Length: 384
Image 1 (cartoon, helix red, strand yellow):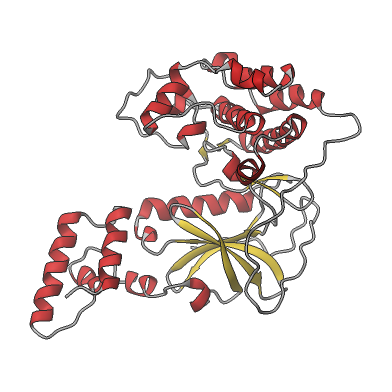
Image 2 (cartoon, one colour):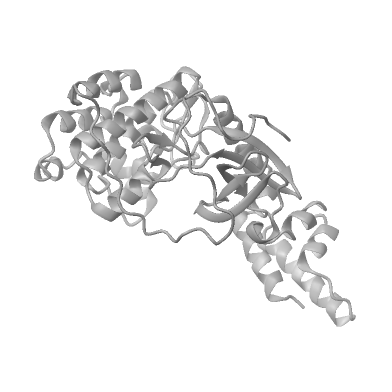
């Protein structure tokens, strides 16, 4: 007989695509037969016995709440500060030196999918390999007690999306300054042969000094330059966030280059300056179709009294035909930096945080911002 925990596990396995519905029904039926024979066997053990999940999953799935269990020898997890589709980010302390860090932990069920596991490790290795002041620094990747994790800088500050949600449109010069910083970070990735493919306000944080930091490389991939191909059609695999996706990404084209990130950066600038995304729809397909076919509503920009320079930059970054966009992010920086004040970038005023305080316990050290190539967290290394 299935317990509540068994049914919850079944839902998670099905949602993650680890086990199909037919196999789960067979597993639950077998579990029920065993119960009638006086044998109480948990669903995960039934699935292991049937070869549907690996034996090591028994350890992984039994860990439970990482904050309560504290599964990592060198890290004391304090609280969850962010959650995505496949992982949770925790504020943590690196025990050997007391440094405040963030630890990203892959969901135990999601880790049973080899493709998601490989993507998680690839993201970690990319963060560890990159050295740029506008990209969050990665330190260490590995696994303990069956849980996969990597550590990185802990950034005290809101995402750009949170700033927009709390206060509406961002002042144009500040929006330009954030965009210039992101363009520099993207140029660094592109020079290393990487595409980000998911630039959006939710993937950018503003730290205590007002610096913009790119925090998520979960969809980044090595840049490929095959010959231009015709549109791949509806069957193509499309990745990215539909509100910010480029027309060529929406079409599922494989010959992506720097200009796909330029487009998403333009949508991000639009969202900051206007306070809303340019296209809405009832479905993801409708939004993607608008990126491909629908022109920007110029009145939305004009009614916000956005300077012509910003309007021009948005229009050029978001050109439907990538041949008319900025060629790369270096061009974006060169163009937009001209509109920043000579005395330096405008100060970024952070909204007052409404997040709860961390739980009682030893207080983490106050963060100090090191020079771009000096790290105060764990020594950089990779595992697995």
